[in-house]
Amino acid sequence: MARDHGGNLDAAQARFGIGDWIDLSTGINRRPWPVPPLSHTAFRALPMAAAEQALVRVAADWFGCAVDHVLPMAGATAAIQLVPRLRPAGRAAVLTPSYNEHAASLTAAGWRVTSALDLDAMAGADLAVVVNPNNPDGREWSPRTLAALAGQVGLLIVDESFADARPDLSLAPGLPANAVVLRSFGKFWGLAGLRLGFALADPALLAPLREAAGPWSVSGPALEIATTAMADRAWADDTVTYHAEAALNLDRLVTRAGWQPVGGTHLFRLYDTPDAQAAQDALARAHVWTRRFPYSDRWLRLGIPGSRDEFARVRDALTP
Image (cartoon, rainbow, N blue to C red; front, side):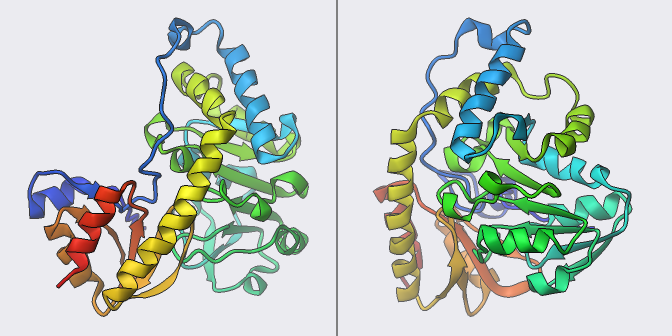
């Protein structure tokens, strides 16, 4: 099945020219955690077991779960691709619309995938996937609600890639035995190029994922950077504050342009426009790249600009 994604800046450049682009198509933090110089041991193989254990301890503290519930992986996408192996293929219900990699990976592994518009429609599925908060509309569900859903399905997968600013939404501190939580490192910390993610689950569920991922699936530099970054709570607090205020500012700008906010998270906003293609093109002519969706000719998603200058360019592009 088709897998459309943001981040296709090369396509934008082919149409609208090379230049100083602001890529708001991905929902990745444009104010990344400042990476310091790496130690020489980050590139050596021998200390990687200790480095992974250090990251697991810091990550468990950040997620609010037990250390033995944390498995670092080579990106959240790697975890999504391995999830179908946890059970024999059957009926999978994916909350829709949402991140399209889940349905695509399940379909490729032989699962019979059905779309669900709400949680009630997922009851009885052999495997259910919920993105919380949801991408692209920002819908959200409480941990209590998702724990109840876990009791109605064979296996519950909760993608919390955009939950770092919302620990109140996370299922991680109270994981049901048949639930797997997926987390992304690159989005909140703005370092997607490290290709780091996490699977959180009961050790019995993590075991086949660990076996499938293989030894040393995460690089030494990624382990070192993420361990330090996830322990930097002052930076995290400042980042949450910035994005909370910046999201409101972006809503204000686009509302003045005649668009209507549909929802979103701390890292992206979704808008209803009269014509998403025309709106995307207008911003692209100012070298601001955004995200359209194949199932809607009105929805346009924008990541959060990372500075006053970026906000000024978006504002100017929205001004007739």
